Length: 86
Image (cartoon, rainbow, N blue to C red; front, side):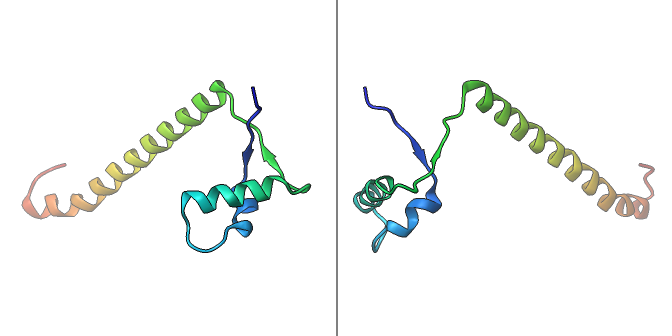
């Protein structure tokens, strides 16, 4: 079984020639990984991916809560003009 590695896009991009397509991307990756200065990225574990997903969900929830507060403050003057107590 061959071992696979992840490479950073910034390191492969200089070897890309012309328009972007699958063949040229593969060619650029093949040329880039042969360089002695190529850096490889570690593969994330399942726990790391779970933690990352949890942080994304939390960030989305915080953003939604902030948006609700902003909408409430925006509508407060409108309801005062209509005579409602909010």
